[in-house]
Length: 321
Image 1 (spheres, rainbow, N blue to C red):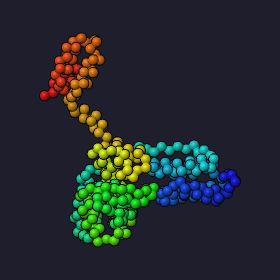
Image 2: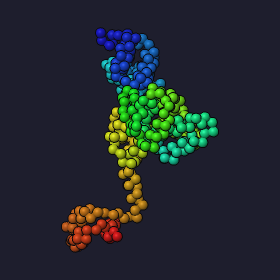
Image 3: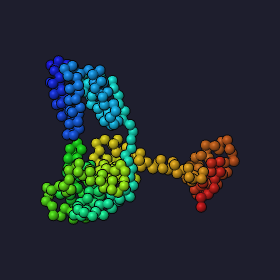
Image 4: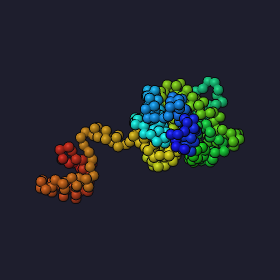
């Protein structure tokens, strides 16, 4: 039977089966199913059409750019599956992760250490921040972390995004604290004994008390990634550690830590001088020697010296001592 011959109940039920096969993340699946249920209720007994889809989407134009982008994408996929083209475009704005200094994370830990009550959870809450900072685990991944997944100098992330497992090396400063914390726990116990929402609320509360704006659990993950990039880690290795399916997701962080931009700006503070290797000077002189015979003598002098020179804006040179 053709899709357009089906009732809306049967049509949307069939598409939900397609979604179950396509979307692995349960939360994402639930969100898409709910969106299409709203569309089904919106059109009633009328068959889906581009015009109805447009008027439905128009209700959500004021949503956050990322949500709007997802809504448009899912509606376009549904209409394409149905055999209709939905001519609505949504562009995801380029936004960078919020950058935080080491002192911001240290301020969170300081707030935890100064607790006047509930002192028994000081070690747990400190580890919560340290593990997030030094492993980049997602909120749900930290909440689901079990004792049996922590080993001598690494842990195993179970059921990460896309239901994928991955290993995560641990730095020595965390290993000792973590093993001490779980020493009396059973293998199947959750390490932090917090659900994802509670875990996230704790981090936000610590940040609020530390006077840090726009800091949440995912900020620790951003910090982990930017720290690795700043220290020169390989982008492919970072992708694996972060559990990113697409390298483009990891490359977003490069814009925050791009050394080329810093080097370019530093030229403004170079007093119009630039240290140029001898080979570069040699090439520059060769390009102009036909019109400036006097440079031939200068070229021979520089080539024989084997030294580095400063080249000024006017083309004059002086040796670097």
